[in-house]
Image (cartoon, rainbow, N blue to C red; front, side, top):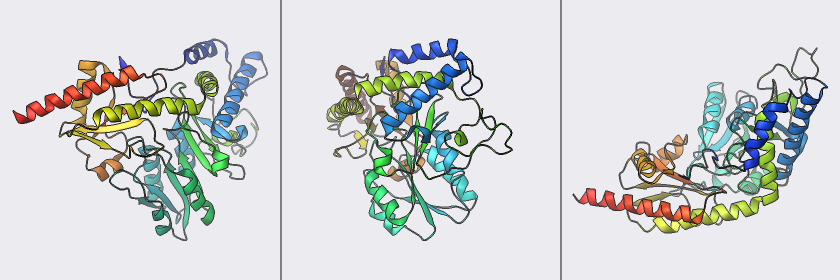
Length: 384
């Protein structure tokens, strides 16, 4: 089996991740709910993961709250950050984890403007100024599209938000662990991430960084392990966004994955994944039947390639890749409806190859050969 679906989840993880989860299942108590060794051990593991995440993301440990995934992280801020009458700038490149909370906010009186993209799926940064209003409160934007792999120039967006006193909320689902991020240096106010993709941790893990001086309102309330006699949920980070028992077992696995990432180096991982992505593009781009989506001339990209073969349904191509070649890819709409509307691929969808740390050039070459054979078969059937 060849696994090219890393944008959905990293199946191939460092061996220490699974070992850490198993060990945690057998030894961790409930962090912050006692003073015996199992609960103290859980607290230490969670704190350790917080420190490593802060180092990896250029953040402050106490300003990182754990969530179940990026979707919960985004909901925890987007559903509680705005008031009726506020205006938010976002883009057509967003995942539904951004779009749907904003649609919900719109139903509650928030106004949202979606910046459009060009033929390669790139936004025009000048549109930020053009769509600015007195009521604009924030820019909510992906660091990299999960469909095209195009990377947002966060420094440029940050300069705009700081110039106008706006909040910058970043969805780093496709970049945390795969591309260098420095939240403080870049001036990101809120950074949401998941643990099971580039960070190579277990599913059910993720988090949100909230900069110093910004106090989020709790998305959910309940047990916190501290201040039990308060009638309101504690307001300090990270407790304000961590109601209930954390996924200590999953965070233990994430903690082990962070050890691997920090030891290997994000730049090293990105260089490897980028090389695989560009090798694949070079191998398939010359087929006239292949349509690529995204800017493949950009110096910085996520290791994602989305394509279609003629008029073939993307699901049919994906099935052929699995049934005939045992290659795992993702087909369909990728939870990115506005970008598919933009490309006119609502019905066809797209076939997404996403490359990871443990993929090889030999696997890429097999995938190129598979695409070539499917193209030839499609061309023959079209002539017949």
